[in-house]
Image 1 (spheres, rainbow, N blue to C red):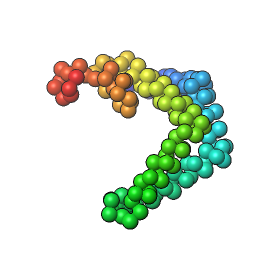
Image 2: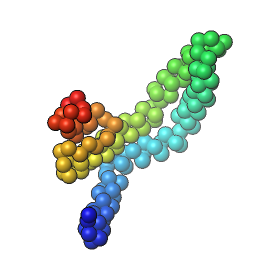
Image 3: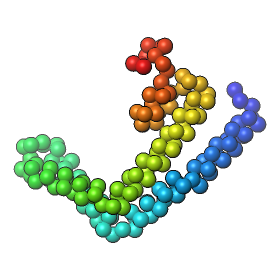
Image 4: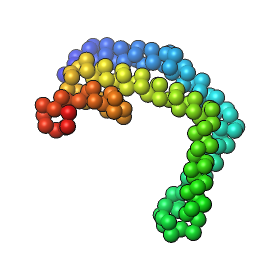
Length: 143
């Protein structure tokens, strides 16, 4: 178990690392894109429309193809999602979000690897997850 001073130092280093991430260009780009997305009436309208259609979709899914509005709602969901996804602010935000997630995944992988190569770091990204696998010596995975 870590001594109290070691824990305090570790927490201080974690705070410094968190501040570095917050001050990074990647985080700044994320904040800029989020601001643009939240302040675009057009983008917000597309998002809100998709959310409403998605609610209808979930209701229709309970009955499947037997629901009287099944085809119409399925078509509307696809069209609404495509329209939302093609919005420049939505697309820009998703890229920035993915970039920030990649940075956080990289940091997690580096920290886990610094402790031990056997430490599993769940990143949600298969490119990083494979690098932190146990190597197959335990028989618990397919690596």
